[in-house]
Image (cartoon, rainbow, N blue to C red; front, side, top):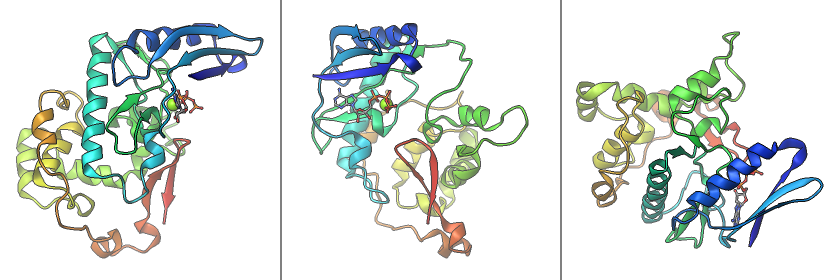
Length: 263
Ligand SMILES: Nc1ncnc2c1ncn2[C@@H]1O[C@H](COP(=O)(O)OP(=O)(O)OP(=O)(O)O)[C@@H](O)[C@H]1O
Ligand SMILES: [Mg+2]
């Protein structure tokens, strides 16, 4: 058994009960962490009991600049998509999907479970404060967070720093015509490692325009049935752009969720 313990000093009772009730309601799905229906409080803490997932979380097994095997990514993506469909079917949204919140029962990702409903909301709810982890947010949310009232970008915002996504978004453009043109043009260097079928999938999932963005559900069998990694290894950024070594820094995401530039 695992206990999720929250200090009363920084947790409202309503917030605790909300996370507990949502987690309990959703815990029957095989790809969502189980709950025992036990909640209690001490003088200083609120707590509820969860199924103990003995493996690591996904963040702990992703090797920087290496990742995890394609087969493991596909297994993981299918299971998390299934969990998200279930959550959405209950009129809720998770709002904090990231590797730290994906728990692994084994290193091969044969069984994974989505956890942490601390930010979950009813679908369509009006949000006063955007919380979560910037590099994992949809671009339209990043844009809101990145532009505070004084017009200055917040430190660590993903919008100016995530060059790889911007290159991809520029390449894809918006709408079907631009997507067709992009399919004929060479992808940006960091995306050349992927097969055309995989780039097509990214094009739907990462579409900058939220109204046109596709979901995983309908296309899942097609996407998992094709290869994602091509044989071509991308050139390093300085080879392609001629920029200095410092300008070739790549984005990495620390466990804390902040954005760090790595040489
Ligand atoms: N049921 C569980 N079994 C095993 N490990 C778990 C379980 N639930 C959570 N963990 C581990 O604890 C970490 C934090 O849990 P969780 O995501 O629920 O809390 P949190 O609200 O994000 O807290 P924090 O802000 O401290 O990360 C997870 O990233 C995971 O590594
Ligand atoms: Mg978490």
